[in-house]
Image 1 (cartoon, rainbow, N blue to C red):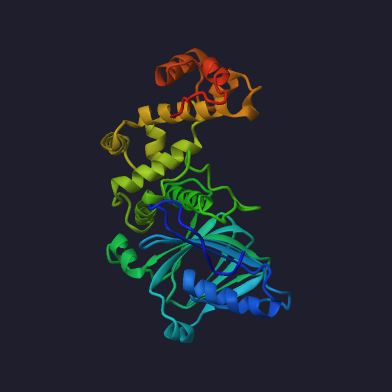
Image 2 (image 1 turned 120 degrees about the horizontal axis):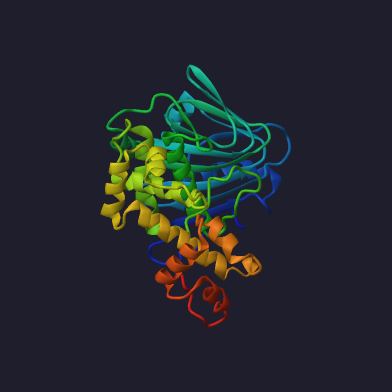
Length: 351
């Protein structure tokens, strides 16, 4: 695709999207154009390759009001923002970098981090740093204005990098995992984006996909959970984190409010209040998501030979009779009828 291409909007609620690729660009011009694109679309960086091989890089960007998202892939390179470079090119943004493939080093004043796939680092782009990717880079990036970050953190500046492992259990890691999942889903809905080739899975994308009009608010509230003291997050942030955890564990028949509350760092009573204020208690939400997941599997031609009992079990139903009753109460037809009636022109039971 041509460098720095503005992609057409798809509806009024969609964010502005940009795409860049070095493919088709003369080797001598790739680094300059790659730097120009990043300065315009994400973060102004001093970028160098680690050898004489031509740079191979792609980037897809989504720009919301105060949130910018990016999917970045590239060959081996080093990126830096020194004190001198920052003076010439101030950004006043905080970046969240989600490592998806390849190990990287991260140097900053007074410290060093070795980052592996499945980890994310939050850092102030106007504090000096150097990052290196000796085997190439594949990551997602989220940036917000520093002013917005200070509002989220209660005025506490980010003086050191905050590293969170979104693959490991624990409330903070779960919040970052929910944020990674949201970013991945939003980028996947962007023209020109594609999934990672070899990367830790941040979890299933929201079904049937993200409401792009709500992505910015949800991203900010999830980020707030990561930078405030325990229990100081908003209901919206905890709700987004809990829904992510639920969707990843729908197949567990023991999934219930107590386990969900523990995963996101709330009391069960507080969790119930958060869900109820959003429209349905957590148990009802879990049941609805299980039935929607089951309806999707029954409508999938690739699952045509899968026994209905197996689909019920994959969606967390330990008793097929209960699954059949709940499915009919929800959609007005039995699971067997739903599978049989999924022919062209038939209504989708999920709608």
